[in-house]
Image 1 (cartoon, rainbow over the protein chains, first blue to last red):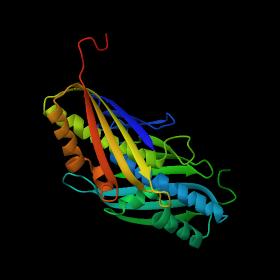
Image 2: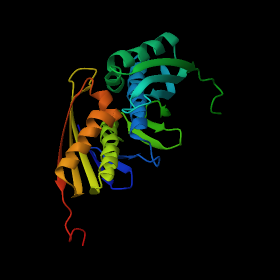
Image 3: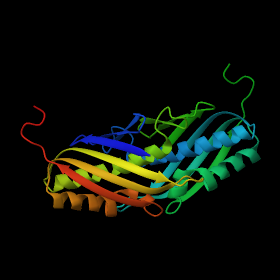
Length: 138
Length: 138
């Protein structure tokens, strides 16, 4: 896996590009997500992929997923994450036990981003299920 | 620090948003950078911010920076990074010793993204300086 990042001095804006030519804008100056925010988004994205695939295999009716990730950082440099709290909101008719199992599998076994961070960061997670009703979206 | 991520079942596309409302697109299906690619971009971005700020304090003439990050991953799940090689290309009239010092300070002391990964990943780095000439850009 290879990425490249470019910057022009003074702009504090960075363009990262992957091997397929797709890019993300990052910023050191609040003009785009910061690198540390990108890491939190990667934690959420990585785990969402797992949870979606696992719930699909379990034939659960996941319609939509929202994940929020709240982190605290060290006060002195290096300002690493101290804690990361992940909250999953699963929309659909999903059995609680299946949701629990899918999220646990992601966080304990598959999600490479959070499993790398886990060595130094205290990561916790919670979830809720929001069943869809007949009238939703009408 | 808080981020939110949304997905619609089946799309494998994820939109992460920070507290300022700025977002990044991530994908589990090659339609945008993957979460693991985003982590590498965050490593490069985080360190670029440091190197830029440190070289500025050192009154070095950094015009532009390019960073490439190459990583290998575990073959079995969790497919965490095993090695990360970072290569910095610094454009401008920069003293080699200052460049070395700035990069070392970033990688050993300030860059929170790489310092979190360092606990489990073998991270190495190299750099080159490309002096600007009078005629460049004409």
